[in-house]
Length: 441
Image: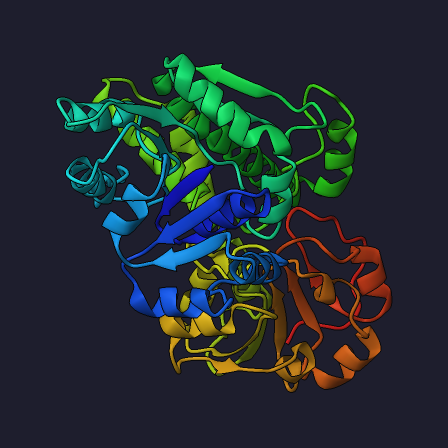
């Protein structure tokens, strides 16, 4: 099948690469000439495990090409995926300007029947707006909502073996074409769920906001556990075995970040306002998450009795989650900004996100090539992202390198009792510590 993917951001690049890998002829279009030049050489501008290999293989075999011309991409394709950014506006609503602008341009480029697939996360009713812009075009066009459910760090697995495919369309022909397109990905029986376009658009927001709700619920509960001497990890184990609740997204921490959850929660809140309805639960989810990003800083200030200025603080983890270099809405940035404002000296390390973080933090922090360099002479270590390499460090070496043995574990990756036995002063999120080694400094 001949496919065009408009936009080579995270979603577009993964979508194009995976569709090409199943034998389709895919052309990816972007206005960023530098990015297209990089992609043509089989290099990718983002960190996503395994993606570069898939891109390189399909470029070499001629199934995946990259262009800067919308006309070239649109005219050569039967199915056009819109994978364009929908950043938050000042009021929190998703900005669909790029989606609508590209739709207007495509209208003038039509050279036959096309299926236009909205892959971007867009407010309910956007497909209706796209269809309205295409009304009266020279050739018939089917417009479909086909939201993505990728997780950064496991995007290839999510694309190749999706939990489900959601197709929002009332066109039997368009549904059949997309079923054929996605058939290689659902051979194990995972469902293709067909619904109307507006329901598909809402499904994307509902899924992300439900997951965000579980995270904020656990974080809110963890803060209460701190006050009651309860261990949130024990509570998590106690409720996770209930199949009505499930095990995923029940880990307390410093809040969620990234390009999806924060933006989608705010966008759904704005959608509710526009419809004259107050989403009180979502408002609380958003408020809890914003507050949670500063919980570790409050613990650190209390530990040092308010004397943070001049302290050397090591931070492990900058990306909003492991296996990505994405620092959008990352809790680490909020924590670092607060520490800098208090006059602390901040030293950081992240396996993948140093370059992207540098664009925001600049020279205000010191960047270290490895985790141990970051903790040399540190008064405290703050763990913000649960990269695997941080989970089992050489604790003896760690303690020798640090000036003071205080650890603030924002992802609860260490066991309090073990840390205490090794002489660390340990602070987790909602974790109960029976006794601590070391002393406050």
